[in-house]
Image 1 (tube, rainbow, N blue to C red):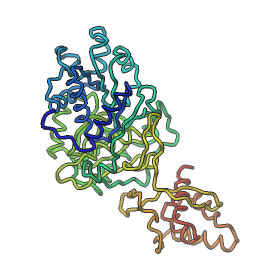
Image 2: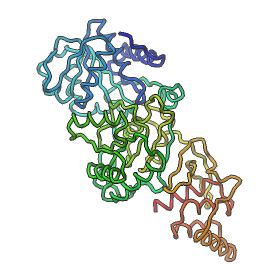
Image 3: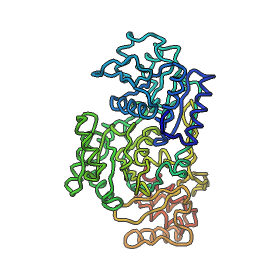
Image 4: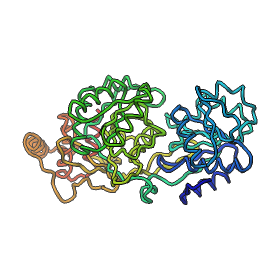
Length: 473
């Protein structure tokens, strides 16, 4: 190894993985995005090289192949060959960085004992047939996977590919240690519609999401929330599909904000120039489709807008991981969730227990309360932010909804409507739950539910639970 210095937790992971490989022939390491997995796998590769064994790093995208080769060479101090279309064969080099698609076509060129270890970058993809063909071709090689999210798109585990898992520090621990950026998480009060969306491969289909969510309205909402909460910051957007991303970009440009759309079909030289301009602050907003989920090291990203809902915990964590890399002058990252993803997956720093069988559900900051019918329910604590575009800040530790000791202020129509319902209930002798049914009928906003909870003597969580229930109806 050269001058690169391992952090203490990285040293621990290297030691634990090498120890595990003495007992298991297939090990997967889990480390949050931005935790420095490349330096860890480089240190492990170096140990194999010292024993005279060669190593192959597998990546599923061409850009990751080149990035992996450059980082491995810089960190290990060893020349790295590239197995990819259009590159010369440097087969004598002990470290190879290979494209999965290229290597699977060239397997006949390589003897079964060519590599002592196969290292799989973004190993949550390893269940694909191409990976299995490669691993079967090199049966004697150790298999080491690395990923921030060791689960498939549908949440299933990887226990059929790996026999042992080594986990690193959590997102929360990396933030507390200063290795990831602290963040503020805002969520749109009216999140994108998913009711009626079709699911394929464990996630919503882009086509059905596009059908349910008006494109121009979404684009306008994104520009509005950007203006209110992160005006002037460098922002990355994840969009539903190419048409949506282009419409979002056009809306930003019409508002006088320097923005560009990028996707997998954008020429590499255009992407490179755009990211350099983004890094320099000349471009403020990059809207993308499926391009920056993995393997993108852009600490310049200061804000993130999620303009796509996802059922996939892995995709959610990959998206938010883009904005959590620390950078000089970046005191706090900003995440604006227009897709309601926090309701499905919790917050980025939520406690998660990763296993080979998948991930246990995050321990969200919830309390048990009783609803009007005496049933035990759970509720998610949030803090509301009063702005022109209605968003709320999601904070795990804030458990009183801001209701204790004060009454939400209502005026106009909603004050009159709630007053009338309360008077009618008292006059007719109805149960308290009757007010909730009527609020649901008239599609009352959250602040009305909050005021009703206080008037009826319910705990604060009742308002949040019933309001969310009314939205799903």
